[in-house]
Length: 473
Ligand code: PLP
Picture 1: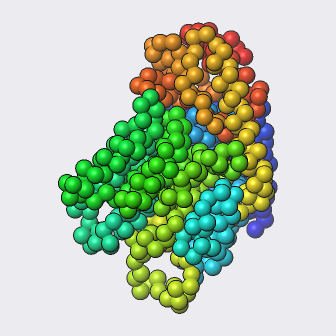
Picture 2: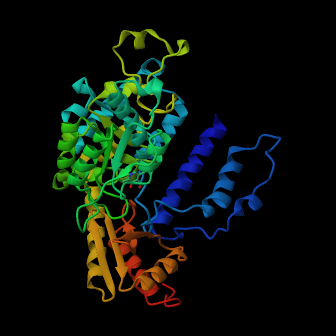
């Protein structure tokens, strides 16, 4: 008990100091590591004798932390953010200490009921349709580990509905079709393969955009039906990974309703922006969706993993996933009066992830979460203005917290990307827009501010001038 309490106190102080160091940019974003570096720094065999918690903490800060890429660093502009907050960290600590497993209502009733409540709260905060709430009696939200899992689960529900349950015994038999564009996240083709559907059908985009062409989708569905195939699911994206493009969900949704095809909307990153009334248009058409997912762990100050998947049709989901061996039978399940989240996800067991969403929403208030989004959007706008004003740079995309740009020539852009990749003090990631290489910068660190934008921009400009043009700033 005493050793634990002392270690927690130490760890808390270390983390707070680390957060301050990140905010002050006193540590690099990326570590100077060669593959295999950790093996040489740590013993190759496990300890025979027990070690003290203090020793582990010391090694964490001496050996592990210097080998990490700091996703909370203000100059971390790579990928999409995975942000965090003290409330989320506290909740994860308490959750770990409680150590419960909420696979079914009966295995920890409050874990399930809190998850039902907070996913309903979040649905309200985001302005999602009533049908997505548990309180509707037909739909509801569930916390998944990732947007990737949300897609896989949506495919299972779609197959259940399209096959009237036949796929459960017969498999997919090469009959069912899934549709998306080439701009859907890589988790979409991955889930398609895992679900036994093979590669998804890639639908053309509207001219000059990365947005799905609903007419092309309609034509493909038609052709597939005539060939005796069963169109089962469309994945539309609200905020693509490359350039934050938004598929025309209202048109896609109408078509899916007409054709009785499941529509899953992947809003992993951009969905959080709907907390703000000025970005509510991102929800346009989702009343026509069968399922919708947003990653609270991307842009809602909640530590990873915390994807929230909502469905308007929980029966398809649970009919697809439910299997009840004798060892899982219990009176609450038999009563039909409870939700068992094991039937809403791939794994059986599940940690109590709702606590962190609950703490985060209470610690920030919806207003605080909105302000965080607006802050990042302002930083992106500041960078976009600098890019636009700079000769030799071209702004390719600027949506929400994301800025995508390139140089005059692809060769110059590639040179910039490779020099940025060797600079440990900031992180941008590469993109491809209209077939041309580009640089992506996405804001989301809780510590980024206007000064960060100037700092990052000066380094990008210096790298753009060529190798060795960086002053020791
Ligand atoms: N969908 C989109 C649009 C994304 O941008 C991402 C990740 O950036 C994902 C899905 C995958 O998210 P996850 O890591 O939660 O599976």
